[in-house]
Amino acid sequence: GSPLEEVPVCMEEPECPEWCDGSEQPTAAPTTAAPTTTTTRAAVHLEVGQYTDSRSGTFEKTKEFNEGGITHAPKTQTFSKSFSQKPVVLAGVVTMDGGHPVVPSVEELTATSATMRLYEPDCYDDWHTTETLAWTAMEAGIHETDAGVKFEIGSALASGGGWSSVKFSAPIEGDVVVVPTVQSKTGEWTNLRIQKITSTGFEVLLEAAKPKEHIQGSETVGFIAIPAGDGTIAGRKYHARLTPTEMTEAWRTYSFPATSNPRVFAGMTHNGGNTANLRMKGLTGSSLQFRVHEPKKCGWDDKHPGKEQVHLLVLEG
Image (cartoon, rainbow, N blue to C red; front, side):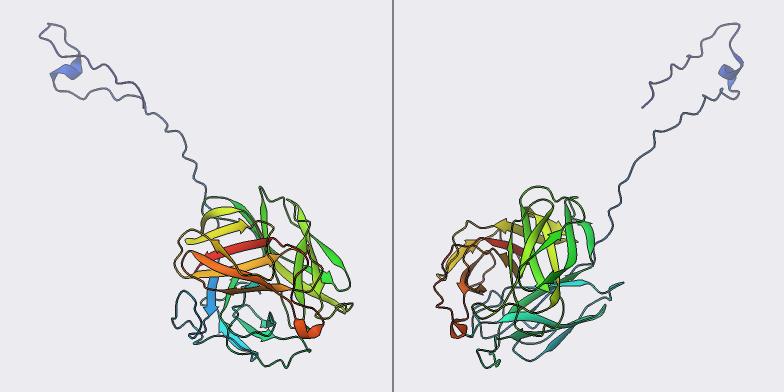
């Protein structure tokens, strides 16, 4: 602040200034306060939910917006608030209440709802028991966590038959965690694997169910790319982690900071060439178990030949 002004004391002197005798005191010149700079962070419209199989050994057994879990039958989730445009939807890791291999499929997506189902390869019967599956929806773009950490929600067109390169809109700092999901109904069973993750992008593979087969055509792949770490997004806790490169067909336990109603999402590398994705069990408020699962009836032996790294994202539900 400004230094205190020295105010003359009125003394009994014959020639006292006029204001000492009770008349109006002179007014000091006004001072101008330094401007205050306030940074306003745009609110992130984040929706998080879960199809919960009440029979499974998951952390909570509560009724969600859609009661019960998810199966091969399409199920629609209406968002609590409409998005200004069609969002990007990410599907979580499917539990393993049923032994057949599945991928979560986004059958239809609008600004107000998402329709999803579990999709088995055609080597199986496409009938699947009830599982638990988390989901989250956000608009595409560069966003910030509540602490100002930048992350991206995006989408890119990936072609079958090989790896497709995905570039971020802006570099992502630190170790980058990537979770992808196909954004529309596919013509065939399509699994996603990732590799060569850097600060500027990654590569994604549309993986077919059978050996020596390739996905035909192209698919739009949505993704989140976020620095590894902990924080909050729109008031919800998140934990982004890169596991050690050790995942195989054996169950492994991973821990994360205590979180209320954790919703689990993940991407997986391609160190082993066999078609495979992740399955989950034993979810609690601070840990879970993962394993690599191959479609055995499609020509694989479910003995994964390489050790994989998991890009793990846990969101508070």
